[in-house]
Image 1 (cartoon, rainbow, N blue to C red):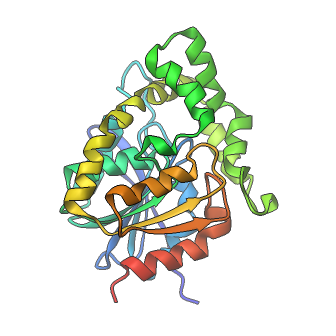
Image 2 (spheres, helix red, strand yellow):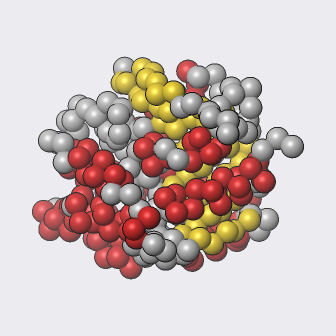
Length: 288
């Protein structure tokens, strides 16, 4: 069996330290793995080596997540524009000229911004439980976030804080799993330790509120899909109560040729489905 080692690296972007994982031959097609909330590139620890025989793989941690710098909210503007700016800064520093984007959860708003800004550089999209349509927002997040987006105050913040709680973090990983015993507790233990750092709640609430800017960009992203028709693979956990199946189906309105693969999973899918996802990615994007 060929082993493709993963390197753990740091870069300084706009004065902030960005952590990223890298594997594979830099001469191969590049895939950038964009993580979700409340995770980090740690969520891709199994997928990276599964792809590294065919791809050059980069998986960054956003500012405030994982091993990257986490300045307090008083010193850094935690918005999806800012997260994206630091990812594109890393891309430029690494000299990456073309790449496929894999997006889960928060990775969607970051990746779709990159695609809208640099459509010629993005050679394909892999969408895994990442929304670009209101159809995909489940009743549970709607009940919490629509009031927060309309008016941020002590009451709406208190409801949003439930998404920072340990029980919610564990639930996000286990909900919809085919076999809950196959889901490693390292997932939520790792994420929660970072969420519980002093001051983290303040900037995570800023990002939860700022998510409304993503919804405001949906129409422009749809227009970009129609104009540039990127090759697209959608792999979606069909039991996700946060980003529901209608969100996956909605992509076909603007990307009718997209391939949609349903997974017997919830919001996070990789613990049980990495081999299948890696096979689908290679079939669509690997150099023949």
